[in-house]
Amino acid sequence: MIHRSLLRILAALGLSLAAHAQQAGPPAPVRIRAVLHDPARPNADLFFTDKTGAVTPLTFRPQDLSEPLFILPVNGSLVLYNKSAIDPANPAASLAASVTLPPDVKRAIVVVLPGAAGGRTAYRMVLIDDSEKAFPKGESRALSLIKVETAIQAGEHKLPIHPGKITAVPLVKKVDEFNMAQTNFYYKQGEAWVAFAERQLQYLEAVRRIFIIHATPGAVQPTVTTIVDTVTAAQPQ
Image 1 (tube, rainbow, N blue to C red):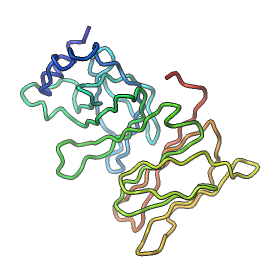
Image 2: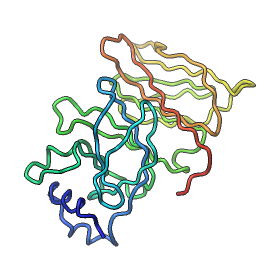
Image 3: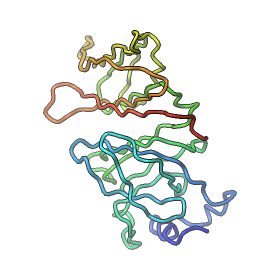
């Protein structure tokens, strides 16, 4: 049975149960892990609809993935709210962020970002398919939030990272005896590539990374924030 909180949410967002009735049944919950990337506001009070239909607080970890959560899609989207009680008279005030859920995605990593200046919502979300097939063990993903072209050199891999895009970085195999490899990030300045981050990282099949390339107010070059995901066992699909 759909929780009464979900009924209030659907009404507040102008959605009808008729659209859901056309489906085979109630929407299946999606397993997510979320990370908040907002250097200006590192804390956020956000809420999601859990698998029972109740509006539940989303607990973030600083520069880390949250505990696995099960979120109930609303009309084919993952939705976050800025309060637990949604006002039917002003539903737009309750919507914090939403992202369309591809129909084949059942597990996702959600990067919660500040919304566009003057935008409709305070936040936006970027979704990364978290299935083992789409994001294998040992691989990395690079997400660029800046407007200039960037690139990564991780061991034997040299890959462009386009603005607003997610780049898949395969498992690095060209490592030393400690499984370490040089990992450099570059941005394009005119016709030249300029290094803005250089580091030695250990690459193991039990570790996945998400590199978030972003700008820091007052800085003259980009910054990389790294989210580390330690995979300890095969995860159920």
